[in-house]
Image (cartoon, rainbow, N blue to C red; front, side, top):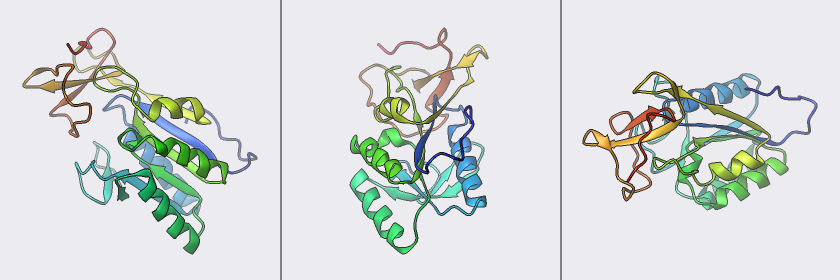
Length: 200
């Protein structure tokens, strides 16, 4: 993490891991949650149910690191499951991957949890394939106590990859393509500022 956590802080804050695709966000997310596990913190991990690229109840990084996760389709469902589990045993840390794929209320909910003493570890893309801010992540960038913005390697020039290029049939996707299209390297590339091609 770029910033050093002050362990004298009152417990409850938001850590955001963001950046473009192939920047290592999920790997960092899993590593961080495991670190909390090693410290005997009770963790719960969620993922959007639409992201089933590598398995229904697990989160995998591109390097095949994995952690068990509960698939949810809405912030309401997440809150219900959290409250049920929290009643049985107090939850210290909540992890949520691909936060941009959940509804807008997730940001309010994570704020509420953090204010009530839960450590939140959230991961998500900062920008969509059109290079516009992705929902939820844009708000969390402002409200999170700790933010790590990771970069990748540009697939064209080897420079600093900061943007996600969607590729369809070997060419950049048009601007009217659907905003959400779950895939991995067969449809996306990391690009730098100079090699990114604005969708038309």
